[in-house]
Image (cartoon, rainbow, N blue to C red):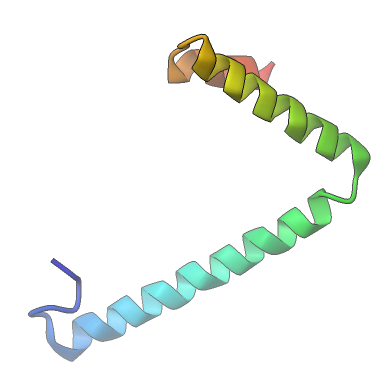
Length: 72
C-alpha cells in the first residue's frame, strides 16, 4: 500500500520529504560519478569490474564469491 494512503496529510508530507532527500542523494552520487570518469585508470578499473561481474555470473559463482573477487 502506498505510504500516503490512509495516513492523512502527515504521511504525504513525510513521503514528500523522503523523496526530496532521495533525489538529493541521487544528484550527489551522479556528481561524484562525473568526477570519477575523466580519469583513465578509473575507466579501466570499471571495465575490469564489469568483466569480473559478467564472468562471475557466467561461471555461476555465488554473490559472496563475486564480491570477494571484485575486492581483489
